[in-house]
Length: 163
Image (cartoon, rainbow, N blue to C red):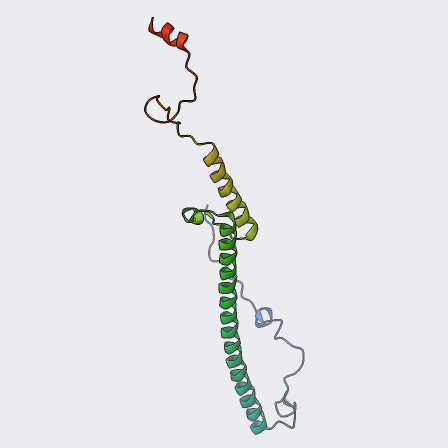
């Protein structure tokens, strides 16, 4: 069984391939019979002068915009620097008020006043607890080697320990 590949190819007519958006039912009009879209009173010199003024105005506005953007960037950087200086001054004031040693200043790292106060309070509490609850063993004073021994001597316990 063989197939016939010689069947005629369908061709489209010009009417079928035409773009419907450009296809109009009106008859083509002569250019001299229609008015130009810019009107009858078009003056090329005046139009060019208007375009030139608009371009100059645009250049001037772009230059003013550039100056304004630079001024804004400068003001923003100054405000950021002032805010950082104010925060540093507040941090130092809170640390000084808490009487923290200089070695603990780097541990205060918060970026707002409440956080700084909380960190300073935590460090101050750690210092006071550390001073009262020392983890170092207290040296036992041996009688006869200086100082006074506060522990009472139990002679019977000593004699019992020797036996």
